[in-house]
Image (cartoon, rainbow, N blue to C red):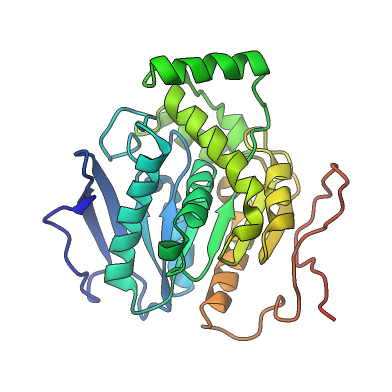
Amino acid sequence: MTHSNQTTLISAAETTREQTLTTTDGISLQLWVHEAENAAGTVLLTHGLGEHSGRYEHVIAALREHGLSVVRWDLRGHGRSTGQRGHSPNIETLLDDISLTAEFVQENFGQNPISLWAHSLGGNLISHWTLKRSDQALQFRAAVLSAPWFLLKDRPSSVKEWMIRTLAGFYPSFVIPARFRSQSLTSDQKARREYEKDELVHRQVTARMVIDCFDAGHWSLEHAQEFPLPVFAFHGSDDPVTDPQGTQQFCGKAPNCHFELLPGFVHEPHNERGWESIVNEAASWLLHQMGKNGPFPSDSKTRTMVDSPDPELTPTHGWQEEQTE
């Protein structure tokens, strides 16, 4: 994959800038740089299915208040990036796109610590990329995963899965409706209205992409013990889209994972009332991983996870970790 001829090193004097990266198959990936004053580090932010990175402006503002610059981008087939809506030829193409944006961040901001932040589908892809392309991923300090798609809450029947797999083989660009109800995303009425009137939101995914991401989530769960980066993961206890048990399972296996279950939250914790608490906590954790602030509650802990096999999740918010001996 190649950079567009617009790609140049970012001047420290600039605070916000739009950028286009061009892939080897001709897709234009749009990204935006939001620089913090005297930045302690930079975060690469990846959004979820059917949406776009512009829906994270309030999260970006909060991260900048913590001294973190943010590079946000729209996945191919999403937002202002080009390509068929909700489609990718295969999972490797999506990983190539991440590698391209990661290379941009590394080249332009690698002089300071860099980290990852991803939601839902973004969490699925970033986790898979980190495991599959660990040599490049290890240039990042840590990853924040918000309601990551490891498992779907409404899992397809074996018959439905077979049908979609068959379609993916013979007609990979076949469109499947993905009409998320705004009530599934947030309980906040204002955020619901903004989602419903957002013209950049689309409500579809293709057979190839949904099967690739379904398989990627399961594969990442199976290989979570190999995850090379520290993780801060959070998930709404009432999420009807992605299953918090998948995130719990991932953190139960990953070597260094802090997990927070947010009682009453649904699929988009960053759009719920009280979102500031979890975003600020994750930002403080990132700064700690970057070595940029004082002692953090996890200094003498090993895991923020209840390792019980009990399938019933207990909502928790706050530091719950096992003391090291």
